[in-house]
Image (cartoon, rainbow, N blue to C red):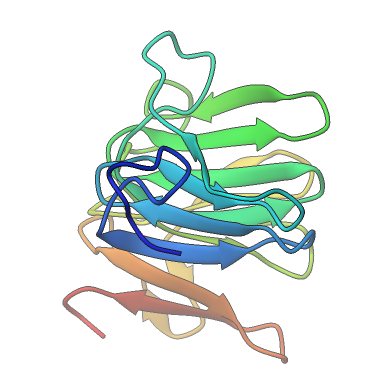
Length: 171
């Protein structure tokens, strides 16, 4: 799959931050300024979710991270928070600095084995959304202090259940 400016069902950008394969075998690519490109397992071509200024669909053009939680695809953007697409109902929800996030610059997403969502921010620390929907700000992981000025570029969970955090400038 590659960009072809003459084909509207090709990739719409040449630069991508993240790629993701969902549980249905679809390929998701987060573009530098082109929103989301999706190659469906059963359909030919690439389909696009682009920023929708009405707020009824994807918010943000610079897509940094994806995760799948049940029927939802969570899309972390560098410029507009997290857009959540409910595939079953074809509806959108936005998490942003207007509703509980410290900022809209999302760098990483993680769904842990307990159903919690972890959101890594650019100079905003880590937001954790518990499986019950409760929001919290994480300032301590094991022996490491997480400060709000860190760029949380990577989140992962190992087989023992430990959460690993990668930062842009401090390891």
